Image (tube, rainbow, N blue to C red):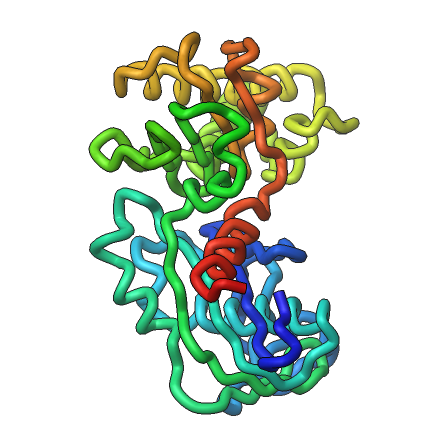
Amino acid sequence: MFISDKNLLVVGVDHGFCLMKTPHHIFENGVHPLGGESTLPTNTLEYNGEYFKVGEGRLPMMDVKTSDDNYFRLTLAAIAKEMDVYHQKHCEVILAVGLPFSRFAREKEDFRKYLLREGEICFRFGGKEYGITIQDVYVFPQCYAAIVDRLREYGKETLVVDIGSKTIDVIHTKNYVPVESDSTSIAEAMIQCMAGIKNEVYQNCNRRINEDAIQRIVMGEETTLPDECKRFVELGLSRFANNVEAKLSEQGFDLDMIPVIYLGGGVVVMKQYGSRRGDNIFYIDDVRANAKGFEYLAKQKLKC
């Protein structure tokens, strides 16, 4: 969101372990240093005299996103993409970002300090020059942010399940407010699911498949995989979806009674392969929902 009279851009950014999301864009979270200027400017970031390919491939899994500057470089790319939406080259920026509910309190301030850099930041991305000043960083709980503006559509009590690349975030709401003691993160999600499926296909079919092939099956698209391989992929996806449902039941939730809202990168898996069906099961397909929610909450905070 751009506020023209203040020359202020509010940018919601969802820093995923696989994909980066903004309200208008989705791109991979790969960051690769270059020895010098790139032959092609596409996805090339020039910052502090260094060159990087940003948005191609995936970063190695890490426990803490603040351990190096890669997620800040990804943030610059995200800001540039949103600036292009509003035809801006120089502006003040407020970043609206998120953390899992269960780690929110202990990581919030570190993540804010990591992203809040002082002074004007000048960089080039995709062959274009940008100048920004990060005025502030707002940090919100992800998963809840994705549905906060629409909770009343589902009822006073809901179970919100955000299936990401590394974790599954679960938030239980009562009277439209999260119950912190019932909200948690499950350290098993789509990256682990994909790795297990690839291994099972190799063990049983002696074929190596990539995640793109699995994603095509998830989306119901045509694939050249042999039927035997496809069967093991679908068995793995069904097993993952059933395991998610089992873990939610183990937490004490009756999935036949409470409204369950699935979102995140794994939402299509739950829609296609989950065993639970009913008027109380909902799916939010937009993987940018958290980024849009961060922006919405920032607007509320700014009262604009």
